[in-house]
Image (cartoon, rainbow, N blue to C red; front, side, top):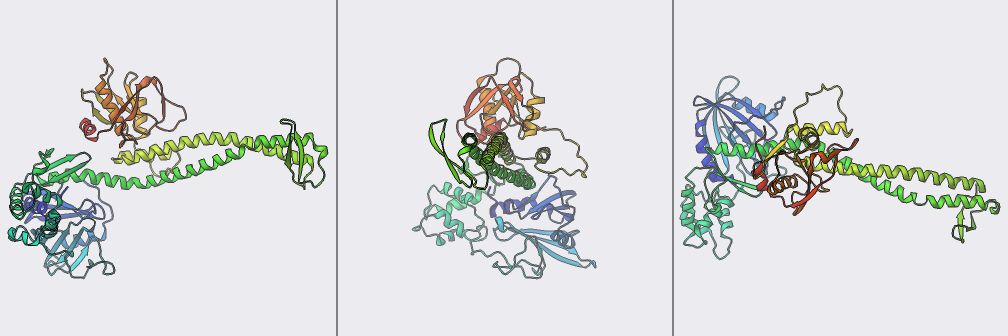
Length: 566
């Protein structure tokens, strides 16, 4: 993305429709983001304003958000000063990523007052600030104290702009003067442009460089003018490059043809940010469960080390049994208070020294060794069984951690929570009324030749897909010896072509822990050959009659095969 000063300039032109609009209601979704419900030009608008460290922005939104029951302090201040107010102007400060919304409102006595809502979009330093007409701060969504900051954002303090070096505003200054600030002998011309021109992003400078061909004293000014001229065309675009996406308010020549275009900048940003914000919020909610799983994983690893130590000690049990037998045979040779005795080992015909407890009789020493033998024999059997279960637990917890990485919906969080309760990792609150079970949602794909494919992203979905949804003749896929999703091709008539098998295998590899690996082995077989073992952990199955293919996950191709979820 490139939410730079040029983008802000274009976006404000689109939001000009909010001028003279009335702020009917203000709501706050989280610690950094708010919704202003504005009535303007005979229509209702939802203006989203966010100071999120990763997703700072402002735009109109059509998505619905959840709001906490208890309004935070900043929201109370915003409602007090801004609700019921009329938006007079929304203006950009210079060509920077700072915006001021001037609002005519009334105080508790009904007297007219003027308030300014300031939005600073500066990555992790982003902020939303309310001041009066004289720029005295009423409150900020993030407080900055003078102890460790160059400026203070606290109620009662005068507002001061973020400390930045003076730059040329390309919309008001003479572009020809840019060359006076560029040292062509120093190189890195693009970086120098960023340091000297306000509102330019690295993405926009790349466009300037592409138009210039090569930065020289003759090409730099015409290239900037040409790029600014092209930027007058507001045509929201989205570019996709592998795992990354870039949006901008106008097409960029150096990126070629865009992958998608939008009717409005708000529509573009609404789509781009909402999915990321929703996933971020869901992962934040799921983080507590991640910590629980990690804690259980660490506990199980420590248990495995202890069991290994028990098994290592159990290797001495045959020695203790021999000591008991030989002491019984040579009991007459043991003298009181002996600390050891040397006997002939009739198994090897070699001399053997047996340690003794001098405070015990020969018979008691023999019985002690027999007890130690029986104890270690019992411990060995128990430790071996527990070790096998612990390894199974490790594999299970590892698969859960993998599933938590790809969690994307609140329903999936709930499914994980239910599973953790069923496995005893967390305690279910019996007083809390049981929630109505939701319908398990599987994730649909379609192969190159049009065959439908379903994917389970967690153990509950995997069990439902393999045991209930899939038919015996359907083809089932899973990464070989690697935690991952169950994948099924929903096709029973005729042979399945090799390309469809490779597509389904790639989907399985992509939804596995080996997503970033190459040549991932994927097993496939008929569903009839897949069996759930009684008493096994959720999502665990055994299968036979499988074949194996090796594929390299390609996110772009997998995303093209993804279908809208019902």
